[in-house]
Length: 342
Image (cartoon, rainbow, N blue to C red):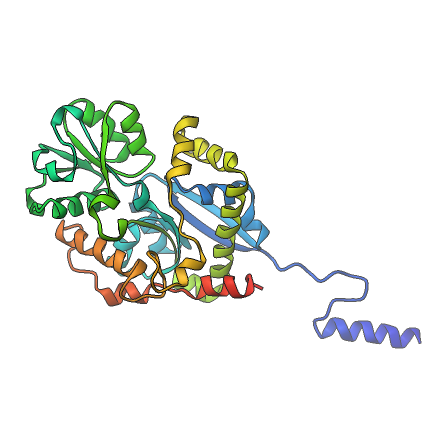
């Protein structure tokens, strides 16, 4: 009998089944390199701090950047697998760096603002023609917002006097009179406001659909082919982070405060005013950030932003609608909602 038992155990082990009395081996975590610019990405910071990536079987390595160039280079050379960022993804597509947009994590348009020097006599988009100099980070949501505001005011794009200024330089430029208008996202717009400048408009005032600036989770297709489960896992991490942040807003606020060096007051306002698209809504064809609508949702918003970037000569050639649509992949959201990645 002992010989028979030993034979049965060894046979089960050879067949790949767990041996009697021993737990099944836990799969090794999948290493994933994530790049992001420092911005109001509280779900990402909450997920990192709570080790939610590890909870779903990932081994994350984070790289934070102040500009989009190293993020783009990392996605090109394969040192990064995931870009959690804004419109830098369009530059990647424009340079033939393949991407798969798997999730709209943040509606950055919800915090895009037109900020002015009160002495300039500018009270809204209709007064943009009075601006003597505009500041906006080039090739970003800020520059796109400035151009769309000009179109709303029926000003030719060439008439704008836009200086390419990083977010941390806008305050000094407003104070010294280098510019009288800035187009910038949160929380920098709030910092300008608290320094005595005035928010006079937001994207929802002059952009159809409320704005075109998304912060997405985009992945390298080659990485996804090697690790097809990671797309769903990234969506699940985001869902867990949203739930955690809503259960405990103070935790999310502290994460923003720590990452960006903000006051508690600004971190709290930044958390409370940021719109985050729901995950289920991204499968609805009619939703603002749909991943399933070739003629609307994320695809249309990226198309509009790419068109602006071509007009401002950020791109040397147009980025086609087909290129954008081929890069959007809704199956990872669908898999999460249907199976919880199991």
